[in-house]
Length: 388
Image 1: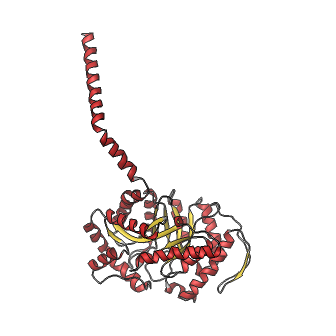
Image 2: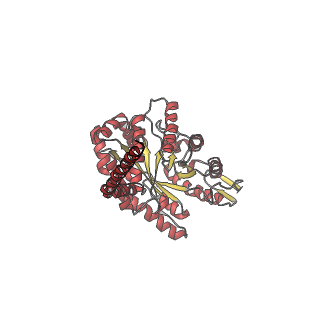
Image 3: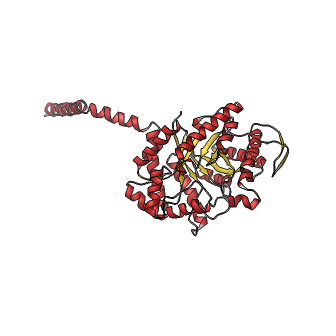
């Protein structure tokens, strides 16, 4: 395994009633903030209804964010591939790959909101079946093939991309996994990465994570592909503050609206809140392993537990939420970047080791410093005496 990467998953969720233009600007500013903090990647969602997740095109958002950032990688998290012509999805991503000089990533899924798919006459089962059909086409197109195919929504005749990707041989492609085996099945079939969005959002979250990679390995063996834990990304909602008390106070700003949305509007059947009161919601979040509302130490503990339970993964993505106000949210990401990520990226221990070595030799070096000062003082006295 390579160093653990850190990033954010921006659905985004915003409290209904806020200025949507200002909310979108805050999302762009958050991506800029993450870039400055040296986060590795950020993923942007696609939604069309329900009022809280207001980015309709992650590709357009990524184009805007790319002009504001320097190094962070930008992914569609996810493109609802079942809704779209697979030829145009592949073509747009290749364009973005060139415009970003290789900083783009493609995440695909069936679409998470039934209120989205119902507007174009699709039900959740059809969306999952279409995802497989359309992903097969996207992979073939990106591999340079000419494709003639008919799905239940689109027809392609000798379809082919006119541009090859900027990335060599290909930008990262990941499939979303929430509650069903759909995502891991397809990731294994094509040898792609997996974006586990909902596995920590259910009481048996850790078991679900284990099943995800097991399904990937089984499908990879069946289709003669390879899967890599380094391309496995886990998404976890998290808000960190200097103290547990401060974190709990911070999330009173918007945790209730977030729980209400995902529990009653977004149709996540595996989501629970643990109770009606704010304190009960916070306790449930921490005790169930669904996420963390707390301190740096709690964040480290959860990530370490996820590593042990899963056998390892490549990226830890914080689900960006409006649990706290914008300033507290930015501070949470600062704490994660400065005090959590280095613990898992091999940056902290060498500094502790260097400090320990310096401490062990402190007495010897202090004496040498004092001897040097005494030597120079005597030298100066001798120079004065020689000129008087």
